[in-house]
Length: 242
Image 1 (cartoon, one colour):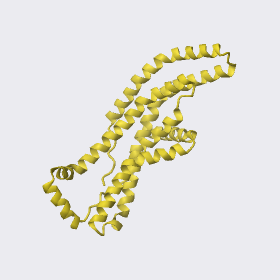
Image 2 (tube, helix red, strand yellow):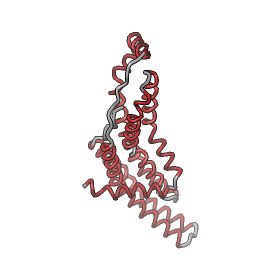
Image 3 (cartoon, one colour):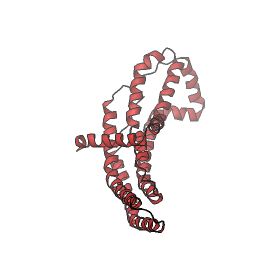
């Protein structure tokens, strides 16, 4: 199994620029939403604490829009650096009886032969594309999540977004950690060609879905803990990335 390919700096910059365009639109309607919420509080004859909460939510929204690109870039780059430090060698699988069957299918079934020829290349490009798209979608959705919570008076959803960012940004680290573990376990699963194939497929599936497992664990923890974790990583790694 090959290590996780790092995200291209140009892709990350494009993601940040897309976020800034969406954030600009959200920022443009924030004043209108603020005025509407103030009017609603006046009509409802709310107390001073309600107006204080509105001011607090507005400040949090503006700060979130301002610092999210920095946090995103810092967390993604830090994750890439940690993943690059986790080195492991791709293991070579010994051939056996099942390889004769696979060789026959490769010869007589065009689709199987095609997958066999482009398998490793496809995995690398697929993982890189999915990772870039996930980070991009998260960045684009962030301003919309912020403003949706602000309009409804339910906060700006920083904690939930922080756990998602941490889970997806850690994918390269999780991928390489699983790869390192599988390379150490590999001698125990190469007694037969069948067991080695099953083991390789299991490792690949686990690597692909590791962000979902990580996200599920983070969602079980307190949202404030996830937010503090993301913020802590950003602040600690900021100095090393300058």
